[in-house]
Image (tube, rainbow, N blue to C red; front, top):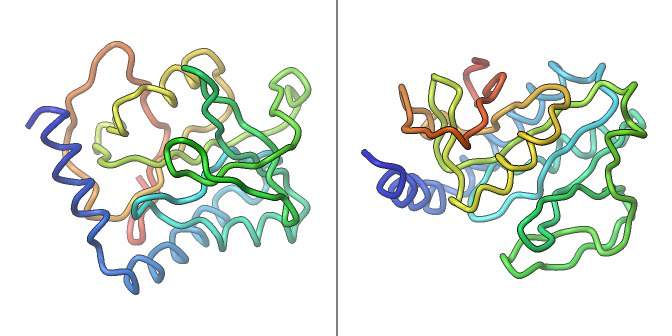
Length: 183
């Protein structure tokens, strides 16, 4: 299958995935993520959209430990990350994604001594550590220019395929976490 076919098929599966199962598995994935990376300092994560793994539990666990959490914001053709705290106000952007209203932008120079992990959503993930997102390349461009810490795909088991088509612009993940696997 090509990227377009995979994207359509697995986005439909993800959006139509049973909400109760999605909530249960999201919490399991959040706990696994926390247990693997709770020694890290900075977390570049996302708020779920269109059936993505919901990291709400992970946010609470990280905030309780005083960790710094940042969320992605699309500005033009670029992705930037902004601080997300318990009391942060959110707005809905042009893609229907909740983003921080006004906060501090993530600065790799200021965080250069921090251990950083990036939790990356996607539509499909390969056991070859490739991923397919929405096709705009925001994450790939960002990650390519800012090699920072661990790149961790966050997915449900059904989103895993053996291998995915990829090209020179795609950035490989370091790890994938699902409700039953850590790859």
